[in-house]
Length: 277
Image (cartoon, rainbow, N blue to C red; front, side, top):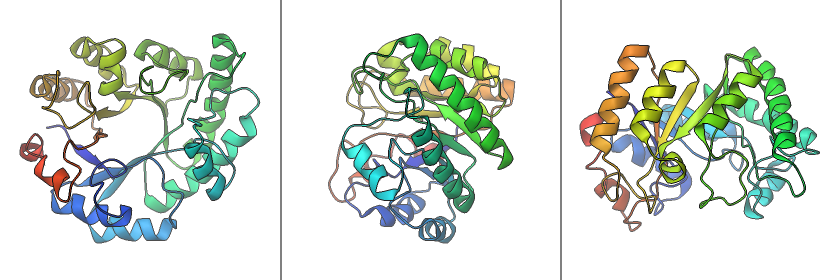
């Protein structure tokens, strides 16, 4: 059956971040993901994982900046990654190196390299070339530590100007990099908004070996599955079927904002996933 990881950046919003690990474990999750670890000591996060019997399965590179303070500032000021932005290669490498430090401490097998907004005046071809070059470097660094590097297409409604929007574009980038540890982070929320046809996309791309991770949220309001337009029972059955056929053993990250953000609301909204946990 599909394996689900709680996204602690979005779920359990009524709790302090460090308390969300225990809440996820109590709800039956065996794995977690979140956007960024950099505001917390790696040892503290590792302890929360160990004490609650959780695996860390994904986090992002910094969205910009060169140290913990500027990582936070970059995100808050609207930066959404540097991997495709000409002239910010040194910034990307600094951030990726820090991500590798945290991945080692947290025993996290995959890192999402944030692609970023199309730089003003940059061509699509120039952004692609910068992205491929940065990913080739990152792939070599990550391979030394046994990590995968992921890129994620993001819809143009949630993040206007993001360089990577479609699955076919992301897979062309992965093929251009040509490294076995560079893969696509297939977020079905973004995919449904941009191109739809989720069943066909899953059947097409999952067997390629180039999908490293799924993420989900209901469309259109990014709440838990079952609150909108997608037939999630069918989608999860399809992922399970195709996974069995091709040997995929990854995780599905629950990257959604609970419809009920009040105390205990996340847990009360988990009926959709209880049978899988």
